[in-house]
Image 1 (cartoon, rainbow, N blue to C red):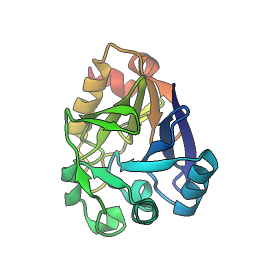
Image 2: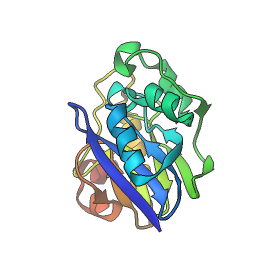
Image 3: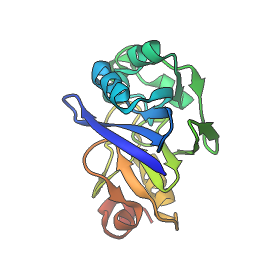
Amino acid sequence: MMKIESMVLGIYQTNCYIVYQEGAKECVVIDPGYKPEKVLARLEELGLKPVAILLTHGHFDHVSAVKELAAETSCKVFLQERDLSLPPKMTNGPLYYTDLYKEGDTLELAGLTIQVMETPGHTPGSVCLLVGDALFSGDTLFAGSRGRTDLPGGDEQQIMASLARLAGIQKHYDVYPGHSIATTLEREQEYNPYMRASS
């Protein structure tokens, strides 16, 4: 059974997720935005070693702990290439990564099957990650809302197209966003005003 541990990190209340199979010793970490020491302490409590850090996008509030966490654990770091175009003020300096992923990639990591879905708009390289019945939506989709597009690299038409893609999914997913509370894709398809406007 897949397990998801969530931590809220930093002044922007960014959701960081540790995802693993029950009983496993390995995991993946999604969006460790701040406080690498807190993430490392939780990993130690759980008895888990990360094999990869997966980034939904390159904004500083999602990536600031990446370099130190990767150095401490020798894990890979995955990023969508288009976010390398973001200005350094949005990424807390040069983005650290070891691998690039893209639309349609399937990763087999820590006993998990992870599908990559490109959902640009909040940033050029924003992705959603599909793992089992969980959808990690980064800052593309929130409970009742969506990511902003007024920052460098944001694009209103792109995020609405991305939300339209999510609106067309006919499968149950629990949605774990980059900020605020978890939700379900069905609930957002029915009630989220931005998703409804996109379709």
